Image 1: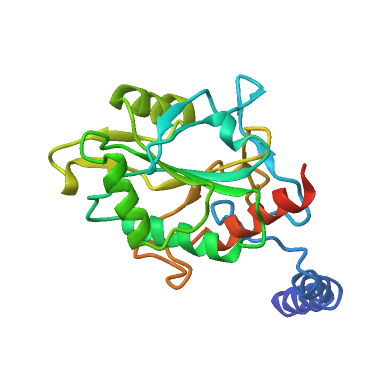
Image 2: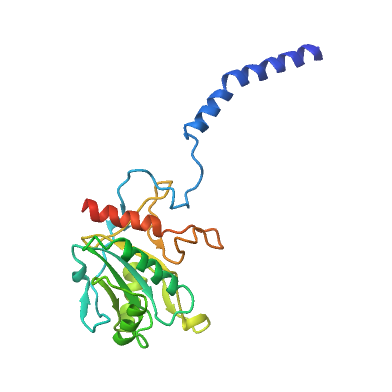
Length: 244
């Protein structure tokens, strides 16, 4: 009886191998087996339009703001109407992530020189120290040339309200961290109509914001997070080219 049982089992295994294994191999070869990489923003859904960030079912729009730039000129959100721009929160004396963020934005500036409708809004979270003159020096040191890149300073409470409520990008004073201020280093992408946009991840969810703290030359940081400047550049061009 055992002999016949072994023969029967062997026959079933053989049939399974003949019928099903080629199908599995074909699925792998034609990439129909999808990896579970939902958190990897470098694997977006192909040919999808950029998402709107929705709060209570409505697309999130940048709120009104008005601050002085590095030339002591009053800049408001209306100055960015018709432009695609990146917004960040930083401070000039930051000893940690801000230099990387600024270098990444300079990279974007240099890659997008042919687009007159691209800009950047850099809001300082240390307005007491970051006067227009200091911001001007900072911009010059990093070779900022884009006329629509404004380094903005003003009332502290207005800036923090814009960061934490307007953009939902965390920023706070903290004497226990290097530099005395903490923030998460995200970049927000805003379209020509003032709406916050982002691409989808591989699972079809908006990534919401782009990591600004990892350079394109690093690819992956020590925590295993991938750089997102490459995809941010792609998405900026998508908005600029399509005027969607």
